[in-house]
Amino acid sequence: MTTDHLNKDYLLGLAESILALSEADQTEVVLMTGEDYLTRFSKNHIHQNVGSRHASVTIRAVTGKQIGVAQAESLDEASLRDTLAKAQEIAGLCPPVEDFKGLPKPGRIRPIEAFDEATARTSPEERARIVVELVTAAKRRRGEAAGLVQTQAGAMAVANSRGVRAYHRMTGAQFQSVVTCGDGSGYAESQGTALGDLDVRGVIRDGVGKAARSRKPQPIEAGDYDVVLEPAAVGSLVDMLGYSGFGAKAFQEGRSFMSGKIGQKVTGDAITIVDNAHDARQKGLPFDFEGVPRKRVKLIDRGVAAGVVYDSYLAGREAGRRASTGHALPPKYASYGAMPMNLLVSGGDQSLRSLIAGTERGLLVTRFHYVNFVEPVRAVLTGMTRDGTFWIENGKIAHPVRNLRFTESVIAAFERCDGLSRMRRRVEGGAVCPAMRIRGFRFSGKTEF
Image 1 (cartoon, helix red, strand yellow):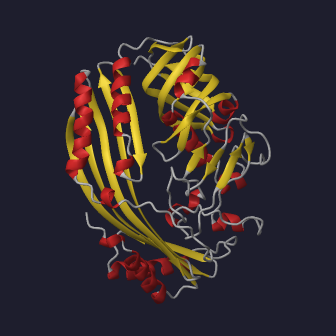
Image 2 (cartoon, helix red, strand yellow; image 1 turned 60 degrees about the horizontal axis):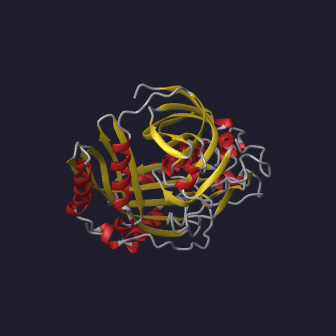
Image 3 (cartoon, helix red, strand yellow; image 1 turned 120 degrees about the vertical axis):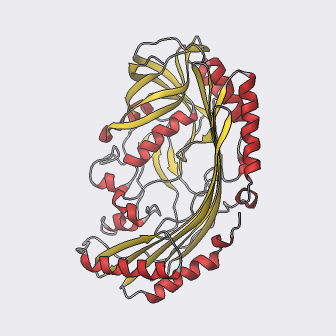
C-alpha cells in the first residue's frame, strides 16, 4: 500500500486550487482519500480478499444565504472544476436558509496521532495469519469460524474561504468473528487504530469458548430479568442514544429524550457519557467536517442530562448562546444535524466476573442484534440477543439459553444500572463501553434458537 495520496500538501493544495477558482461568496472544500483492505472468512475458509482505493471531494458554495452542495468520487482536475461549477449552480437555485450564519472561522486544532505505518502497509498474508489462528482454535472444538479482518488508511482535509485549513490522517484495524459449534454460537471483536493493538488472542478465546459453551441452549420465557451486558451489548444501546438524542437538531425540535431535561436526572447515578475524540481509546478526528476543532462534550454526568453536540448551523439557531462543538457531519448528511462520533461510557470498580457473581438469577448477554427504535422520545428500543446468551443462577453461569427479544427504554434501564466493570472496550459502532449490570431488563418475546 502506498500512502502518497494521503499527503497533507497534496490534499490542501487541491483545496487551495478550488478556493481560488470559486466565484461564490463563501466556499468550503472537504477532501477524503484512503485505502481499505478486507479479508473475509466463513466455514473456516477465506473466501474474499479485496482492496479498494477511494477518494471524494465535497464542495459547499454559499451565495448570500443560498447554499449548494456537490460531490464527486474523483480528485482529477476536471472533476474538481465540474463539482465546483455544480455547487455554485445549485446554490443559485436553492431558497435562502435564513438561520444560516456563514461558514465557520478557523479555530486551534489539537492534532491526534492516529496513523500507524505498519497498519497502512499490512499484507494479505498478515491478515490471513490471524484467520488461520482463529480457524485452528475453532477446529479443535469442532467449530466453524466466520468474520473479517480489516485494515484501513485514510486522510481528510477541510478548507474554506474564511481561513479554515485542517488535515488529519488515520489508520484503523478490526477483527470480528462469530464461531458456531452445532447450535451454539459466540461473538467476539477487537478494534483499534493499529493492527498491533488488536486483542487477537482474546477474540479467539472468547469467540471459540462461548460457541462451545452455547451448545444446546435451553428455552426461556419472556419477562423482566436482571442482566449483565457485555461491552458489545452496551455499545449498541449507547450508539442508538447518540443517533437519536445527543445531537442538537433532535434536541431543538423536541424529539430527543434530552429535550427540556438539561440539568435534570435522566438515568441512574452510575451513568456518565461523554464524547471525546482526544481520548486515547478513541483517537478520532480532531476536527469535524466543517474543520471546527472537536470539543470534549459531557452528555450525561452521573445521571444528569448535561448537554448535546452542535455544528455551526445548529449553534447559530440558538442566537449566539451556543458555539459549534465540532460535530458537523459531511455536508450531504447535514439534514441529520450534529452527531457524537466518539462516545465513552465511564467504567466502575468491578470485574465482569464480580458483576455475574452479584446476580442471583438473570442473564449474561454478549451482544444485541438488529436494534431499532420503537419510541425515540423515551429512547425505547427493540432488538434481539445473539451469539452467547447464558442463564445466571446463584452468581454463576449455569447454562446457555435461547435468544430473546427485548423492548426497553434505554434511559429507564440505565436508571436501574447498579454495576459497571473497570474494563472498557471499543466496540463496533465506535463507542468505548464497560460491561453493565441492569436490574429488571424487559424481554418481550422468545425465539426457537
